Length: 487
View 1 (cartoon, rainbow, N blue to C red):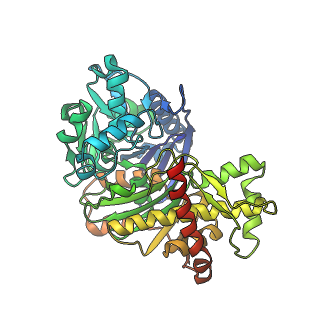
View 2: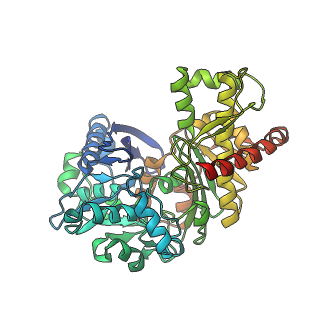
View 3: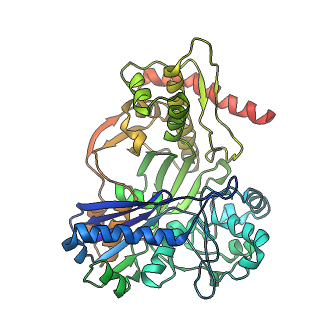
């Protein structure tokens, strides 16, 4: 048996996998985010550890035989969060999370003054990354900053509690902006502007390699009888890619969750920082990925549901029960700013061209189209940096809507591949990485372990939808450029 943990922002998920790759059980525990000031987002690292224990104990109670046979553990987690430890390994302050924007000034400064972040780190410096968080701490909490002995990422703090080892994997570490992504090694040139050194960084391991052992007392507490290897694991999207079998150059997935992601595997480092795309290591050796991110996908639909006092199901039924018809208005989905392609924290959403005769259904169509246009922007950025994905494996809550996927297929000019229903998320990918770390496997075995889900359908670009939305997308893009000049 193999155990995967995904340390998310809203909760921790644990999943049990057998040797044949079948999911035996899964469970979760919720987490809270504290926001002591506008733009701040923090969590107590001990809350992650408590939630991990809660899920592990629940699995031990409900699936004792399977838990007793666990041989390896894989870890996935929210990226970019900064856990600062002192010389006694005490947590110095609550972890500053990926969606914290207090360090916008520091991010801009690092990006403008140090070109190595784009050249070696492969990314424009954004407030979400770890590097500007450290610089903010150095300036605003200098007494605490001088006490830092080690900085860990969220999942790696959990690893430390599990094993006593300070180790991170390549995919998650790339999100700090302190990693030379092509060389897969910490970079003194990237650490120095933040007042840090390699000695304050954890050891590095590939995501599928051993990176610690579960402490015997914890194994006993969780009802595990074996000596348990802990895999390097991965950042949440890289681990999710392993869960979906998106592991070979040219493979790509589309995630329609709270945010929207296009993830494309590359066989080399292929950065595109000028357009807000990310270039990170994958969780597997000698493999990288590009990633474009929009900050609000299904979150736009949730927002419309809240302000219209109408359920998302009702909104979607009003669309999907009818044939395609473009909305008479346009919608910018920038409710929380935007990453790809604008890298614009000040971007804001809006409806344009609304009239007295328009209704809630028209607004819903506009929201779906606006998110589809944003996903097309993201695909174009990745295409310019490497090559356009020919197909995208769909995942996330929004991917349950064939109507929405048909819009995205048309405007991205990509086939959308629909997997069977099931759990193909980061916890599954983490468990698979644990399986790989448990012993050496052949290339054939690896391909089998990291297999793609069964496919139940393909949505190809529809020429009629593509023609109907083509000019509207151009207008939509012009609107952003015009509004940015006057705000």
